[in-house]
Image 1 (cartoon, helix red, strand yellow):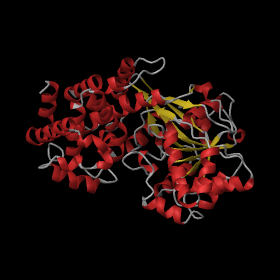
Image 2 (cartoon, helix red, strand yellow):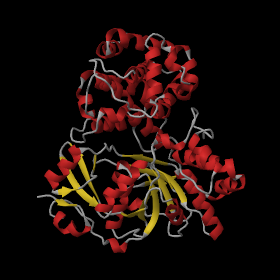
Image 3 (tube, helix red, strand yellow):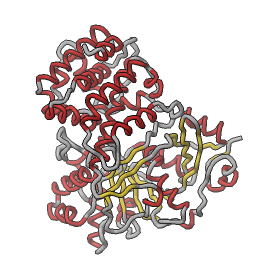
Image 4 (cartoon, helix red, strand yellow):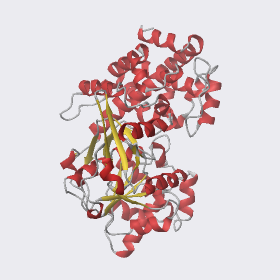
Length: 490
């Protein structure tokens, strides 16, 4: 019989799953984290949990924070289980569960004053973020967008901020007033040069109301770049049921993930950091080669399989990899267009890395969905796909397959699969995307006119021609026949 996840029930749970071997009372706060979602709890929180198991870094425990409406429900669920999370690792040949205890508190979302007090606490030496690719208020060129309504509102009222960045600025100001050193701001989102992007957004917002403070942030606050990786699907009733039936744990929000995880970080933490190298984190002088490899081979690869699989009514990612046309489409694009765009990576064979990615995508137990991979293309395409197109055009490498990937995204945003099934909204900008996709059915250039997505790539005659060719074929012949044509070199 399943028991509710709680500190009181850990002894019972220990017969069925791993549990923390350290006492919660031995931990103290050191990191304030914005964006307590599945990826954070499967990644950063797991690394810290493993570190605490070694009796190391126990003054770096996590305190959660959030500003989104959904954060309130998340906090309620975690509060009911003493901030514990069941993490279930699943590979083709094994599954195992472990309860993590590295988070010791979660500030009530919406309580700005409590968040500011925590930010001004000298014990907090790192502020970390997983707020998704779309949470950084960037324009088409990945620069800070001062015209965004949320940024304009915080700039007009910096004493009562509503966004993560407004709160961080106000927290830094309080530390400055108290004579405390600034915390390090550590981005854990899948964004190229994520530390630099975070700094640009933070300083850009500060510049709108206090240029002097913006200069102080640039001169004094550290923003290390990092590469993070672990495939972590959303939690559904399926995962809750497996957690209950197979491990006897009633967890309102378990996390299921693959066994593989990776974290590469630039070692730039003036106020100290946990000794995460003891649990597998790789500290380097420059994370750029690693993040570029991951963002292109893995994240762009996800996009490559997502949209054809979505149009063919494939539900799970591993099922997409079992589809001969989808898997062959991925293989051809990766080998012809994506892997060749990745510069050398220290001590890494990019061809072997791609083989690892194929094995990870093919994991039959992870339960990752095609719909999750299709989510938020308006933010993900400019970060994962368009840079490869741009680089390949400049280098004279092919873009034919990537043009087809882009056409498949456009066709998906029309909102109907090849079988006629309705695709429910799956992007923050879905209405706008769907309107363009409808117009692009007869005029493909309507889609490429989204400069905020395509930038200068849309003006390239070769790319525009191949995009139009593939989009017209998708509408005329369907996804399956179009993939067959591409694989035949037509």
